[in-house]
Length: 249
Image 1 (spheres, one colour):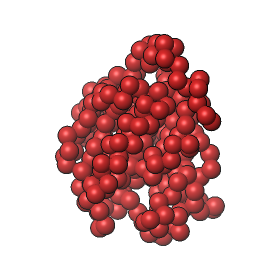
Image 2: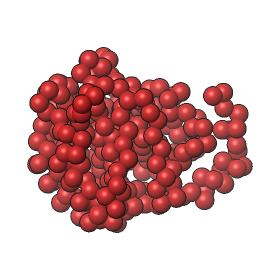
Image 3: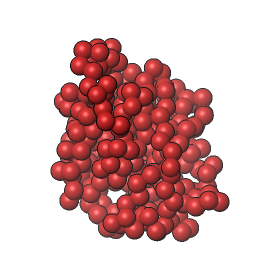
Image 4: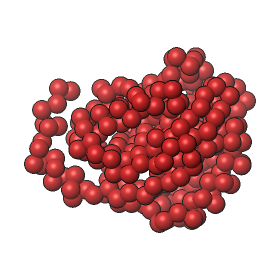
C-alpha cells in the first residue's frame, strides 16, 4: 500500500483557504492509496472552539469526501467538531466511496487547557483498509503507550499532530518507540509554520517495525513523502520475532 504524508503550514482559522490549497497540492502528488493530513488541518489548533468548530457534517468533511472520490484514495486528518454532546478533536478517515470512520482524541492536552474545552473520546478506533489495519491517534495520545498498545490488531499507527518545535525531540523519540514496541509501521504527520501560540518545525515521518526511518520530510518547509507499507515484510518479521506474543497487556 502507498501512503502519502503531507507536512503543511496552516492558515489560521481559514478552512476554505486551507482546503483549496490542499486540493491543489493533492492533485500534484504521486498516486497513493491514502493521504494523511495534520491535526486540525483546516484551521490550526483551535484552543478556544466556541464559534470556530464545524458541525458533524461540516464543509471540511464534505471536502474530504469529494476529494477522496476524485483521487480514488482515502484521506485522513483531524477537524475541530461540535455536536450535541460537546466539542471534539475528531480524526476523520474518509474512504473513496465517501464513507467515513472517525476517532475522537482520547488524551486531551491538559497543559494547554484542551480538556476544559473539548470532550474526550473513549473508543479506540482501528480501520481495515486495502489490506492494512490502521490505528488512529492524535498528537498527545503519542505519550501514552498503553492506549496505543498493539494487541495484534493493527499494522500501522497513524499520528496526526500540531506538535511544537520546543518539544520536537520528544516527538521523534516517541514515534520510534511506538514503532519498536508495537512491531508496526508508524506514520507521524506534523505541521510547520506558526499559530498565535506556537511554532512548528514538522518532523513528519514514517518508521518501520525495526525503528528505522523509511522516509522523513525536510524540516521547516511544506513537503510530502510517499512510502510503501510492505505487509509481506512486516508479517515475516512478526513471525520470525514474535515479541507481541509476550506483551504484558
